[in-house]
Image 1 (cartoon, one colour):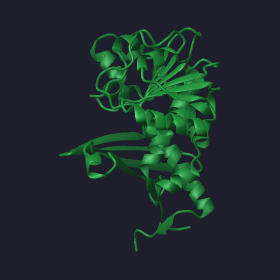
Image 2 (cartoon, rainbow, N blue to C red):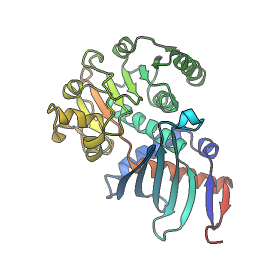
Image 3 (cartoon, rainbow, N blue to C red):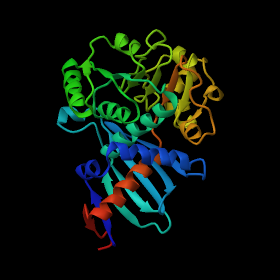
Amino acid sequence: MTGTLLLSRADVRALLPIRDCIEAVEAAFRAQADAAIPSAVLGLHAPAGGFHIKAAGLRLSRLYVAVKINANFPGNPSKGLPTIQGLVALYDGDDGRPLAVMDSIEVTALRTAAATAVAARVLARRDAGTVALCGCGVQGAYQVKALAVVRPLSAVRVHDRDHDRARRCAAELAAEIGVPVSAAEDWPEAARSADIVVTCTTSKVPIVGTDDIRPGAFLAAVGADNPEKSEVEPALMARSRVYVDSLAQASTIGDLHHAIAQGVLRPQDVQGELWEVVAGRKAGRGSDDEITVFDSTGVAVQDVAAAALVYERAEAAGRGLRFDLGA
């Protein structure tokens, strides 16, 4: 069919179950072992916020190229607007046709959680069953849902500066994943009690230190996606086996970059990028008592994998609004 599909957030949510997104993202990481995947990142500042642009290509049933533009305006909630808004434009990489334009927020939340789940498969202990989450926004909830797909969870504790928000998140997650979920007021204590620790905050100071993680735990540091943000103490990074989604990116905007700046880690100390572990190029967890850290900064190949799956399913289901850009 001709024309470009316009797909809403509801469309993306309906067409991309978290389990399927995990498999798509894992396949995309594995594809990196077989072919060079082009990617690019661009940031633009505006007076009240900024725009973050990520693009990549991935050959699946065809060569797909996705360009994601996210606008981040911290003052928006006071105006009744979301902090982050954005779009993904999906193209046919062989002839340049614009195939679809879709909401990026759902795509971003799903693919980010999927990457954590893929990392947990190879970096968390096989019997890891308890989770501590800091940050009860949309992304945090998706992180727990994704982990429930890949690990036999027995209990989850969630923490947020807004304790009412944490309680609501706990109730909603418990109903959805069928596992006991409670709101924790004491974040360090919750982190120390967990096999898997996830941070999804906008913090600019570390919220997880060397005394907050027990031996054998897996830590997914998700929130630090610009140079000012920081969730993990550099000293904890230094004593852990550290993996990243992109070494170049994590070295400049992730928690890794703070450890490098303090001189406790070098880029060459990182154990590997996630795609290398998934593809068997690098080793994952070596023992049950070591601490593993996944520094997740978000890479564009994840967006392509998720957007392509949404597009193919929308085409098959006849979903979305079709329009002709040349009309």
